[in-house]
Image 1 (tube, rainbow, N blue to C red):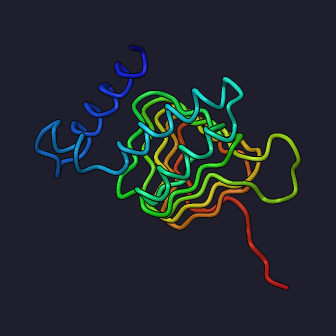
Image 2 (cartoon, rainbow, N blue to C red):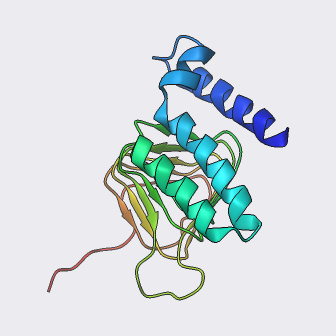
Length: 171
């Protein structure tokens, strides 16, 4: 029952946040960002109960149908709005707070250098712009806006807007 309540809350939030959305039925039928939340909540439940293979199967089915990949181990808060979700990747040890927005082609991933905690922790009320990459076991504060196509490799404090957090040098 809790999962259904959370999904209803997610759908209502999407309807309220997306100016192109005219009603709740539209969200339920047409929004892949909502559909992946259904798959993830089920996969995460299975993952927590150590049914890892079935959890990954549910997760990969959701990925196939929506183009959005969320590892079943990722912890997602309430009222996440995934807008134009194609190409989003959220890693196993990532956490996302409440009332966040993530746009298409974004990654909450690892750098390949860390062993256990590999993915970022995203605070509440965070907006991740299209194409943004937030990488590594870093913390992103509350009320943060990450600009489109930004690469974030360092911690971000509360209440800031970032477009780049670390220089990338090609050798």
